[in-house]
Amino acid sequence: MKIARVFPRRTKATPDDKLTFTVFPKKADIPEVDEVHISVAFTYDLPKSEAQEKEWRRLGVPVRVGGPALGRPGGDFTPGVYLKKGYVITSRGCNNHCWFCGVPKREGGLRELPVTEGWNVVDDNLLGCSERHIREVFSMLKRQPEKPVFTGGLEAKLLRPWHVDLLRETKTQRMYFAYDTPDDYEPLVQAGRLLREGGVTTEKSHNAGCYVLIGYPGDTMEKAETRLRQAWAAGFFPYAMLYRDNSGETNHEWRQFQRMWVRPQIVACKLKERN
Picture 1 (cartoon, rainbow, N blue to C red):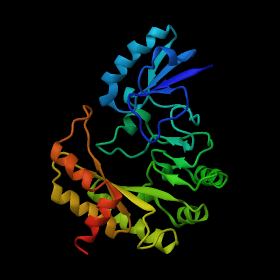
Picture 2 (picture 1 turned 180 degrees about the vertical axis):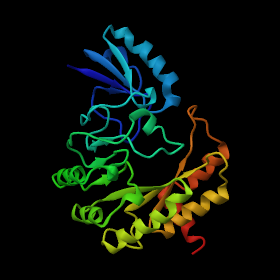
Picture 3 (picture 1 turned 135 degrees about the horizontal axis):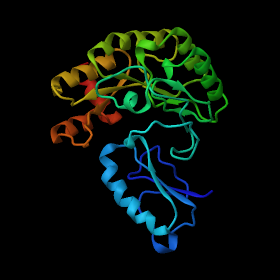
Picture 4 (picture 1 turned 90 degrees about the vertical axis):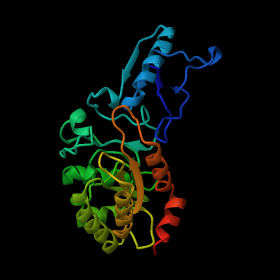
């Protein structure tokens, strides 16, 4: 079955094959397909997806709308369909209930999926999985043509020495942790220590990053900068992640602040300012 995949916006993870679209094609480029699947990741893209649905129904084939923004739990993962080749999801859901995260509401508790092929792991919370599953994932990663990347984020408080051994053995290229709430800080410091002692990172390496949530209700830029610098001191290259509500609205000043703390070259310069 030939399926056209349609997305409201293009990201680094969007597939790049000939049946992937973000706009309705010109008449000469309209593909012959059996179905159209519109995948919506963000709630603030729902209005655009509704307009896309009307456009694609002109083909006279079934049009289905899905994705995280619809609040429906995902099923087993098929590589290369809704995420670019190389991206892989081996588990869904999370047993945490962070106030700002919609994953538990959409996916429920953590559940393990059949392990498929890929090298960029984007699980909701891989380290919350069983040891058997985690070892199976790393065994799969050893077969890949690219060094592993953990874009989905690793939970610092769950990191153990045997995880560090697996990260070192697979020569992990990049990994990301998170500093979302105050109680994330001490586990982040401990995780940074484990990674250095395990030979995965050094004081000068940038292969371990940290998503730092900023701009949420009650936050200030002074507090946000303190957290970003704390992440760096703990051994992680900081990346500011700007909080968005369901409407996707953000404050102009916060957007400017984030731009200074999300581009590696600018972040590196700012980190040197007080050193």
